[in-house]
Length: 92
Image (cartoon, rainbow, N blue to C red; front, top):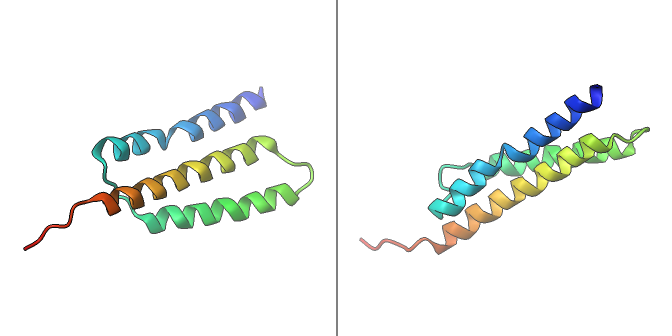
């Protein structure tokens, strides 16, 4: 029964950033998103991944959460940077 809660948590962790990713993709901009926040979030994920991998026994469900979260955060940061570079400069 306890595994069900873990898998449900992993499911929601996998999907909660998807609306943000879709919004950036559709609007072709991510100016309202703090890149620093996502970078700090990824640093937290990476250090927690290192901590969990070095623990015995290894909890693969938690590792999956951090890996998926890191990938999604990196995608958001990359999309934000990509679309910012593509914005036309406005001359005054």
